[in-house]
Image (cartoon, rainbow, N blue to C red; front, side, top):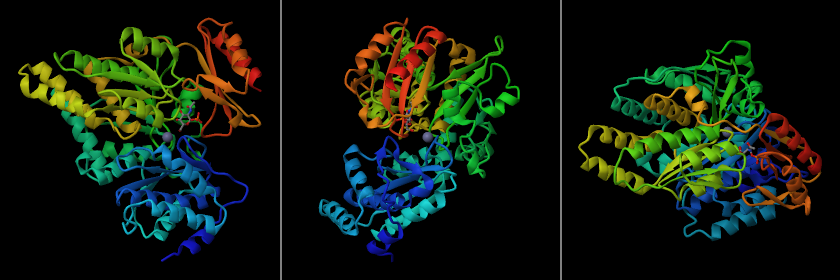
Amino acid sequence: MLSLREGFDRYPKPKDITYSYGTAGFRYIGDLLDSVAFRIGIIASLRSISLGGKTIGIVITASHNPPEQNGVKVIDPMGEMLPQEWEPFANEFANCETFEEFQKYIKQKLQQVPDQRVRPRVILARDTRASGPHLLKAALDGIAVINGTATDFGMLTTPQLHYLTRCFNDPKFGRNTENGYYEKLLSTTRRILSLYDYTFLPSVTVDTANGIGGDKLSRIDSLSDVLNFGVINGKTDHPELLNVDCGADYVKTQQKLPAELQKSSPKPDQLYASFDGDADRVVCYFVDGKTNKFRLLDGDRIATLFATFIGSLLKQLSGVDITMGIVQTAYANGSSTKFIQEELKLPVYFTPTGVKHLHHKAQQFDVGIYFEANGHGTVLFSKKYTSELSIFLATTTDTKQKAAAQTLLLLADLINQTVGDSISDLVTVMVALKIMGKSVNSWGADYTELPNRLFKLKVKDRSAFKTTDAERKLVSPSGLQAKLDEEISKYKQGRSFVRASGTEDAVRVYAEAETQEECDNLGSGVCELVK
Ligand code: NG1
Ligand code: ZN
């Protein structure tokens, strides 16, 4: 067995780097993460011990970031993110330099647990990046020095590992195998469709960013006729192509088709989708047959589609008392917020960027829908939701109402409630469009987006940028917000905000306004003030 000392010496921490557990775990250049991966193995094991031996997950991925980057993050037993109160420990532990400190941190954590003899259990998966295998080895060594049991699930999408972690701790959630994930998805889709006498969904072409999502979609496609996918940018065995000129982040930030599709001629008025590198984000789009223009259907649109669909089903049931709320971040297009408030007549709440914040807020509703504009999001359903609908189902005799209640209950199984999941989100989009008989054109016509742009600025010290009001206002550097407000007031429907990125060494500037020209001018005006 590897001793603590041997492990510490095998994975020395580079002296000049300070690692930080950000919005999505530790992220850095993949080749500089070995010591962090080793230590995350220990952190996950300690978390497992502190919870009496519950299974904890580790995902090795840097999502939509470039191929040379990588990251490690911890998943809690019910599939949630590592709780925030563990982050300071994770940061201090990842950055400690001497063996004495390193050992002291472990001892301190162990002293806080009721039973130190508990054997930790950790499950792991990684995306397709070249640095994945050696980071996996380091994480396994970290688990080994704490005498933990580790199960490596190989290459999976991030949401699949969230699903599996939950299944290990809550067997009712599903079978704790990769096949169990597909069985649940396929059987739930089949059951919903059969309520409306459908047997399959029309094929959708998906750009999987040359990431792991491509393999998994092809697998689903081969398992059943219910779901049919055509995969483009599916070169999983070429990690150097991951997210390059393709994928959800490219499509959302460039507001154009993935390069591969620009070359071919996408079928007009057909649904297309793009995943990111670890398949937890999805954006949809189509090419308008009349104008030949690319039309993006981003995370805001997916949220409004889900709210429309679930709302229309709930409306069919009388006497069911279910609350629904939508959670967005400041990056949500102003028109989407207006549509939710004025057309759907639903409450909207704002939280800081990062799904952990959105997830937390969404838990306050019976149906909590949260999406970041970039396509990361899901829907949470409360216990009351299930019990109210089950009672309704048992008491109603009306066939249409029965089908609506059954669909609503099945949606709670279809949507991966542990985390945003491109596969299950996309299938839910396909189900919603099919059952509502809604075309992509009609979905795109729900509201008209305000022109918007996102800028990324290199600054000397991004930590100087501190925000309040769900990141919509700056409190530091002092005086800057007043200047921004003055600039914003010059533009019709102008809105702009500035915040430090949690995943990159940069400051982001968002701008939206009534016309593209005004939006561009507002954006550059704000960038000038920030520089
Ligand atoms: P940062 O780098 O903090 O802006 C980005 C995304 C977040 C979230 C995280 C985690 C934008 C503007 N920001 O965060 O929404 O997805 O990455 O992956 O898209
Ligand atoms: Zn991702």
